[in-house]
Amino acid sequence: MYDTATRAPVNEQTKAAQQDAALNPRFYTTDFAEMDRLDVSRLRAQWDELVAEFRRDPNKDHFKRNADFDADFAGWDPKLREQFIDFLVSSVTAEFSGCILYAEIKKRVKNPDVRELFGLMSRDEGRHAGFMNHTLNDFNVAVDLSFLTKAKKYTYFQPKFIYYATYLSEKIGYARYITIYRNFEKQPDKRFHPIFKWFENWCNDEFRHGEAFAVLMRANPQFLEGKNRLWIRFFLLAVFATMYVRDHLRRPFFAQMGIDVDDFDRRVIKLTNEISRQVFPVTMDTDNPRFWELLQEMYENTIAIHAAEKAGGLGGTLKAKALMLANGFAFVKLFFMRPVEMALPADVRLQPVW
Ligand SMILES: [Fe+2]
Ligand SMILES: [Fe+2]
View (cartoon, rainbow, N blue to C red):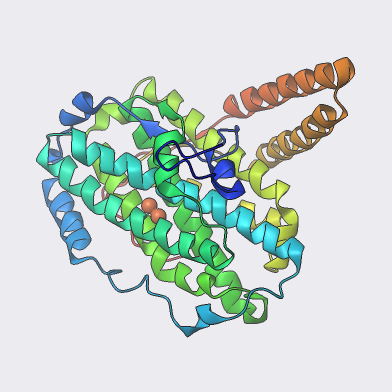
């Protein structure tokens, strides 16, 4: 595989980032003309306050490396190196996916409120992606972001699906970064790389991005009513199930961080679900043990799918197809579990207090 502009071969990490497997972060495009019709006047005061916070740019000087990064990582156990790189590649792809989607919205939308906000969010995500990629570069495996911009497939999503999905990925990103950060506060000897020290301020950026989508949706409540409530349930579940399965496939990496992946996913999913009540009138019942059993079933099916695909042949193919169907059923069962319905709180904004 070559970069068509330079004819230089791209590295394995760039190829991995380019893959659109079901569990990998994707790149998105949307209907920009429809986004022009967003109107924030209903929540003008909150909107202006939030945009002022973005303009102040509290993390302007945060993403600078210090001497800790000069450490020699060459002596690492090869397994840890591989797992850490895999974690960074999927994180940098997610950060960069936000960066280019937000930049594209800023470029293509005329609505001045939307333009300004998305320009500011793109600035943050570009910084995050660059900071992570710098760490990959220390291992000589940086992802070629300009190649990715051209070569990765873009998935079209209606604007409302972009709002649900990106709102959730911002808030779950916040919950993940803060939970990892707090873990290393408790057991600093497990912190095997300095980048984790940056996660505290970093997660505040993600929290703020989530707030922006919350205000945007609350100012345009048609996205939160009627049959959209079903779409909200669908997106909550899709985001939670993807994370649960993907993280459980990386259990050894979490163990290296001193984290039990089951405990981690429960905390992160519960926190994200709880936070999302600022904007979603309907959320998942994470207190129902069946919810966790079905997620676990999806993870175990996924392991069995990989094994069947590896075995190959007609038997393997049929078995894999049957298991995919079983995963579809598990998802449907999750979808039809009784959700939690709550009236939206009077205050739209939340503070990151976790
Ligand atoms: Fe980010
Ligand atoms: Fe973000």
